[in-house]
Image (cartoon, rainbow, N blue to C red; front, side):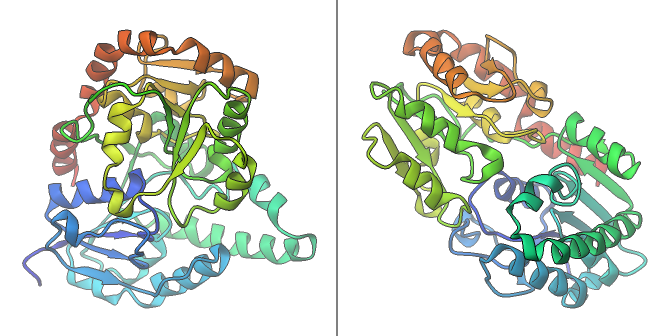
Length: 363
């Protein structure tokens, strides 16, 4: 048995977003090793972030989404025998098929960000994107993966989740109870710096995040500047680039190893985050930690972390472009500054210290 008896298995280190940051904060609390489908150059370099444990890749990089999903499913099923060496395994995202490789004595914990949305609540959205002739094949794969997921999740010792919203979703779709462990924010990193003349979006460029609507809104406000931080592997990147073409007030930035990211947050007027039925939404908590109010949608998961008119400004959950425009015009530089203290106060409820304490107690 290795000296470090805990390992975190995360599906892929593909992006530089909050769930990868969450895994990095987990290993610090648990002194764990990390395994993943693969570690992409488009994500965080763990060694540059002071990670000293074992890094185990179970497959190779692949970026075509559905090919990646099938290849990784095979890898988690058949190439994770090393999990037998550990007495605690924490699963993150869609990798719990590897539970079949754990020993009977292994404590198996699942941090469920959400039940796979392509199988459950957003199945219709994914199905719409599939070419007509391939739809029957897609439905068969989904039926098989859903059966496997429900069988595997029944074998877990503990399910942690990120919000009341996701807890309800797990209960509704799977009839299983779970324990809430809110994701943390490192308040030493996300701090108020100054207020420059721009609004910030740092959601992943994916259809469910609706960054395209933010771009459309700012195309109608040429006097307002928008900065969009994105990842090189974001699936809707080119579509949103094309949409913004010709708009000098909209700037796209990608950051190597996320260097400078907290500076962009700490210098913004406010941030904008309008996803569809978000599980919890760590990005707005990071924004509040930096003293920046959030323009957000009135949806379940997001209600758990913010206070209307004090730390955020709600718009209707449909996120109409006119609503985004009205919200941006309401959150002026002066208004945003007046919300700074309330934002920072609320973010303290999601501190890294509180997260580490509860995580260690549970695991």
